[in-house]
Length: 359
Image (cartoon, rainbow, N blue to C red; front, side):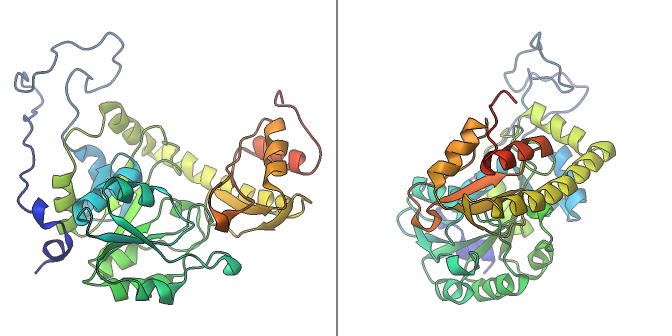
């Protein structure tokens, strides 16, 4: 029995995917009930009066080359959030199955599970060890009805990377029992190696990536799911056609030109340097109790008084992220690494040198 046959929702096995009208360049398209005219404001190459491709194959090939994998191992989604959604919908039976998470972590796992009426089980990170993975307890928790194990590395909101040996233990323990979904939304900013090799070794490993951060396309909403071709094919049947818009396809293509990628790589190096500088400055502030190590494009700190920190930043014209209602993150603040001048403004604010939000 294949992994999809064993773990996927059995009621989806017989679902027949929608067959869209074909598109062939050079032929008049009278098979999809589209407008024959472009909008006056339409500047796209393809034209917004026609539907986008059922699947964005042009950028699928481009991204597969970038990640050095075969195209049939990759599914393009609207942000990695949509990948989380279709994984839970595709593999978890409502009211019956469960997912396993390691809080504090990305809250969308919980949200999509709740929408699907899927139980969320928790193995909290070890707060006193800089939010390290509690590997043995996580392994012990991989039991029915758990279908998906979410490991975010670097983790949001803590910024910590999970050690490869620990994640390897989890993948081995879950093999043939559950999918291990490694969310690598921030891996480009990490010093640690990514988990591509685990995808090759373990058929139950799924990788999630995004173009929101490293090529500055958060507004385009492009996510990438990397998995065994059988899993990709199954989830492609769960995902409706025409989900990825034409302008987004063209923006991704532009972002992956050689010149654009070189600029993105330079910016990643700048963010890494600024991350170190900002973390050191925050640790020196009387407002800050502890700064957690980070491999992401943000740092998490524990303030002595979160309200005071937030107020200082706000008076300087800066918004930072709090986590109300999460006891393990009491007085914690997440600060995204900004441009050097924006980081300077925050450093002055938390150092007691107030600035107005006019500059």
